[in-house]
Image (tube, rainbow, N blue to C red; front, side):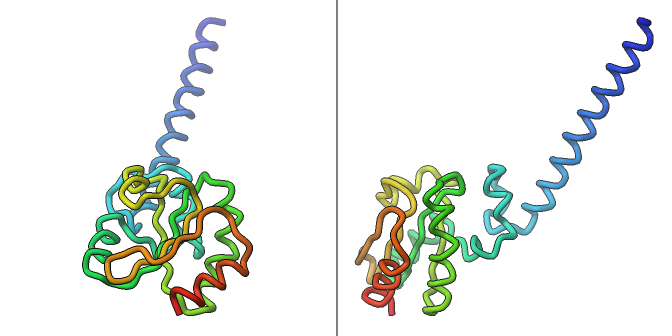
Length: 156
């Protein structure tokens, strides 16, 4: 009975090791061409990498440079673990696309320092910058009509 128990435990341990290897390999493959470069990503971000709603990512350094250069940029600050973001993104992103707004997305879950850098208190937050200055900001989950009005007034 002792030898059987050792064999069973060994098989279980081996299966767990194999499972960990497969999951890590799958995550490495998913993040290989990600816009985040070689940054170790949280699983919630990895799960969104192929989702068309979460493309057009901007990194904090790139956003800072665009603002500093006086470029016009619209940014959607979100977190993949934010319920309000999960509710807002499915109608905000298609709306921006329909209105030809080049809305960048910045994942605050991966870049915690960006909360302070860009003065974001909660997610979702939509901000438009022009000439190096913030022009407009919408905080929290809003109806689609408010986002449409935001784009019409400040972006288009």
